[in-house]
Image 1: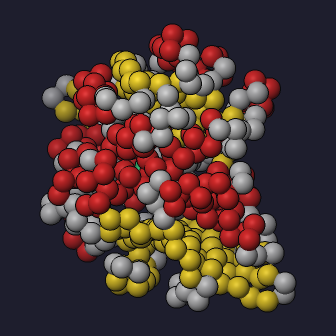
Image 2: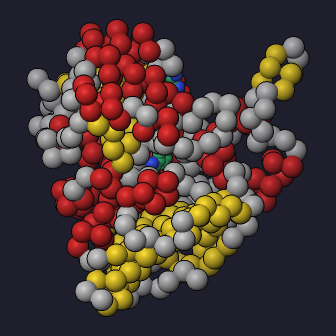
Length: 399
Ligand code: NDP
């Protein structure tokens, strides 16, 4: 029996577990392990009855020794890490110690420094290579599918890609005045950080949300899209040859920005611990506790997401523009797996990456970002597993 372990039992983990169970030939036996076992058990109860045999366990993924004991007991071939970015290194350590492949959807972030950098995980390259183990980093949608789209564009349509604009639009409405679509702490840390893009060999920093463009998204319409730093920029700059500029834009509505501005102005988004009634608390963690749980947004969210990449470059000396994107419907996702499109668009690619690794198509010893693998089997799976993509060779461009 082929065994796989999922760590985490939040929004994304729920989708990964559902999609693994839809592919029982590959995911024959699955363990869902997380901090709160009751959440793992609830997922198991939803999924029991299919061909995949399910198990659950409690684990503190900050504790490498606990992870090693659990992995040695269950003996999975692969661990899919969909806990939080803070656990990436402890889980990678446990995978090395137990001879287990590794996959995640977000790069390591130290809890006390809001920094998205691959350096900590890239430092594991040699150890994974020597152990004959594969680690696939950032295999969600962005990062994840955006890297696969880039590798696919490069392989089939370009000799050189000069410009990449990644556009992430969420046209969904959950009816709350303010809520975040995935883990609020991670989401707010990302948005309140300075913006950054790469041009002509240099990183250019902007104030948070300083650069805005209005873009007309297919099936969503015109939206304000703001330039953010996003972790796939770091690896794409290295892996896509001939690049002159890469930027990342995400849409936010005015009400979201107003709420965020107020929360920031009163200090609620800070990660600096403060003393409250004799106890040290992080304001952002407290804010997370009072905001709606992203997992609860599923039944309320209507509308669509549209995420993709616009590439500009040359093929056979001629200029080429190419846009590849996916549109995902929040309500359709909820009907299928019980969560909204943000978790769906992250969990489906994580399952696909895991499937390709287990099938040997994306297996090579070392630590890799997704654009370093052959994009073709992944693109085929996207169409089969619920995230079909569309192409446009005459796309609107972002100025
Ligand atoms: P959630 O907060 O919904 O879920 C996180 C889960 O991890 C929870 O079940 C939580 O347990 C568990 N967890 C946290 N700490 C530990 C620990 N120390 N030990 C064991 N389990 C732990 O987050 P999401 O599902 O929304 O996100 C999961 C990951 O996906 C995050 O890393 C996020 O950054 C990433 N992501 C990636 C995207 C992409 O496109 N690449 C997009 C969206 C998210 P408990 O239930 O007890 O809180």
